[in-house]
Image (cartoon, rainbow, N blue to C red; front, side):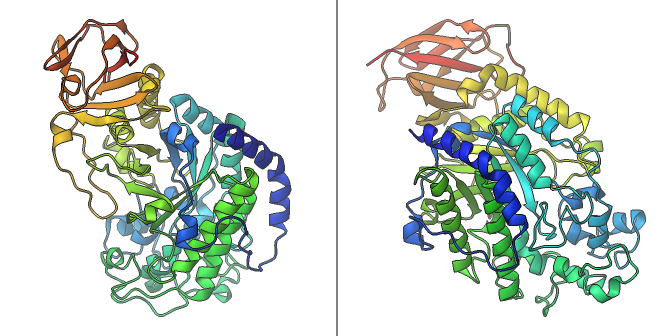
Amino acid sequence: MKYRILFLGVILCAASLTTMAEDAEKAQLDDIAIERGPFEPKWQSLSAWECPEWFKDAKFGIWAHWGPQCQAEAGDWYGRGMYEPDSRQNKWHTANFGNPSEFGMKDLCGAWKAENWNPDELVALYKSVGARYFFTLGQHHDNFDLWNSPYQPWNSVNIGPKKDIVRGWAEACRKYGLPIGISMHGSHTWTWMEPARDYDGMLTAADGIGKWWEGYDPQDLYEQRHDPSFDYRNFGTIHSQWDWGNGAALPSEAFKRKFRNRVLQCIEIFSPDMIYFDDTVLPFYGCDEQLGLDILAHYYNHSAKLNYGHQQVVVMGKQLNEEQKDVLLWDVERGVPDRPQQRYWQTCTCIGQWHYDRDTYEQNRYKSARQVVGMLVDVVSKNGNLLLSIPVRGDGSIDEKELKILEEIKAWLDINGESIYGTRPWHTFGEGPLAEASNPLRSQGFNEKDNYSSSDVRFVVKDNIIYATILRWPETSNFTFRSFAPGEHQQPGVDSVELLGYGPVTFDMSETGLTVGIPETQPNAIAPVFRIRMASK
C-alpha cells in the first residue's frame, strides 16, 4: 500500500509541478505560511514521522554537491578559504583571479557558467550505476541559490549560469524515476562569510554602479550587516561556533526568515522527496529551535497532502539524540557507526573533496570503487543508506577518473545489487576484526577508513535469503562463516549456497559454522557475495 501511495503521490507531484512552479515564480516576498495538516510544529507531534519504506529499500544515492565554489576547482569551503590570508586557497585565488578585495565570492558566482552541464546525461549515468535516489545542492554556505528564488536575487537564474540548476536536476530525475533531494546549507552564511569583511564583504549596492553586478546588493549574498563573531578571522573558530555558541554572532530575524522562506518555496515548487540540512539537528538549532520545527511540519504536511494523508519524505540532520531520531533521519558525515542502529540512518561521504578539487584529481586521491563498495555493504548491514557525492567540475562535467570509479561500482552492483536493495539487517551485522573493534564517531562522523579485509564479513537478509559479503576476496579455497555455528541464534538448515555472478558452490555445516568453497574464478574484482538460502522453518 505504501508503494501505491508513493507512486500516486509522484504522479500528482509531476502533473502539478509546472503549475506550482509558475505560481511560485509569481510569488511576492511575503512570508510563506506553514502548511497545516496532521503534523504540528512540535517535537511530540513530529515524532509521528516514520522513515518511508522506499527510502529503506533504496540504500544508495548520488549527490551533486555542486555550485559556484566549484568554478575555482580548488576544494571545499573555497568561498571562505579564499579570504583566509596565506591559506592554500587564498594564494591560489590571488594567483588565478586576483586579490579577493577586487574579485571575491560575488565575482566567482558571475564567472561560473556551467557551460557543459547536462543533467539528463548525468542522472541517466547515475541511475545506470545503481543509484536509487539523487541529491542536488540547493545552496551552500556561500548563500547562492541554485534555483529561480524570489527571496534571493543572487541565484543561478539571474547570475552566472543563467539556468535553474535545481529544476534541471529535478526534471531529469522525474524522467528517469529517481527520487530527488535538495541539500540546504545556507543557515550558516551569517558567520561563515565573515572573513570576507576584510576584503569585499562589506560592499553595498551603491558600490556596484558601473560594475557587472550593478543592481545587485552584495549584502544579499554575504549577509555581513551585523557585528562580527568573536575572533572571526581565525579559521578554526567557526567549528566551535557552529552551534551558535562560543562567541558566534547570532543571526537576525530577517536573515532567519529569509532562509525559512527559501526552503519553503523550494518545497512548494519542487516537492522534493528528501531535504538535507547541514546543521546540528535543524537550521538555527541552538538559537531558534522553532524555525526548524516549522519547516518540518510544513514539509511533512505537504507530503501527506500529496500522498492521501501519508507523508513519504525524509529530512536529514546531524548529531541527533535518540528522541530527535524519531523526528528526522540521522545523517553521519564521512563515517560509519561501529554498530547497527535501531532507527534508520544515512552516511554521507564523497570520493574526493565536497567541492571539486583539481589537486585531488591530479594526485589520484579519490576513494576507490573498492572502498565505496566496502562502505556501502558496511552501512547497509547496520540499517543505513549511503549517499555518495561525485565532485562536479565548474563547467558541469565529471572527469574521466570519476567515470572509471563509477563504472567499477556499477560492475559490482550489476552482479551483487540484490544483496543491497530492499534488504534488512540480520540478527548479527557481521564478523571479523572490524566487527569486534571499536571505532567511535568524532563530532558528526569523520571515522571512515579504508581498512576492510578478507576476514571481515557483513550480513543482510531478504525474505528467506541471507547475503554474506566478504569485504575483500579471500586467498584461500574455502571460507567459514562463524555466525552460522550452533549457539544462541539457532538457524534452520541451509538449502543452497551460491556465489553471485558465478553459481552454486560447495558448502558444509559444522560446529564451527558454514564453510563455503571459494572458486578460482572471481565474478567481480571487489568483494564476493554469497546467497545463502535457508530451509523453511
